[in-house]
Length: 287
Image (cartoon, rainbow, N blue to C red; front, side):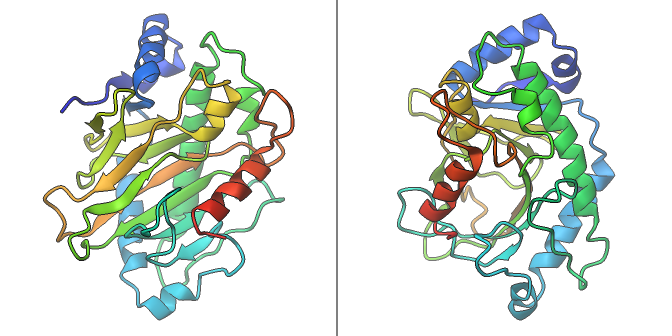
């Protein structure tokens, strides 16, 4: 099985012309690539994984105290078996925690678990991912694409989400921990080095392995960026399956970079990020 390409974060920040040309061609076939040489501290990453394990090892009754009814999963804890991929009938085999912006006071405030030590490291990682995402968008703004909004500015104080996911051992022979779906946001940044299972679908319909090493970040295009780029950049379906690790828990930490809710995504001017997101959370059973 072929693998997705790797690009240095330093080359992205420097807007290296050869790298940008290579990235443009890569994204035409598969909207996923790996970033290495980034500046997010590995100790911070390890600490957040530790916090994630502490969160999901708590009794259900404790975790459920942080489930905010009516919030559509925007903050806090969402139990196992609720989120369902678009156009699917079987729910994903996961539970998760959402942490959002601390700088945009118009958005829903975060929740903080008293039962877990060092919980505020989630805010630190959120901030680091937000800065990295901004650099990626700056690189994308150098593509020969007329975006429907200022790409970089749209994500400043955006409605972004740091998600901590726990996939327990799979049930009843169902290998799909998360069924095929695309991400709703602009771009997703995912910490590498965890259990195998993430695959992306290329334009030919092949499933491409998306595993990467510790210290690397997987980046992919989301639906909002596809709309904002007038489909010059395409959102890529992906899934998480059990690959010889069905009896083991899997933890994953993606960062979903979103624009501010009022940002207009389409050329016609009638589709805001808020409207688009609201429709999606309804479609995936979070509303």
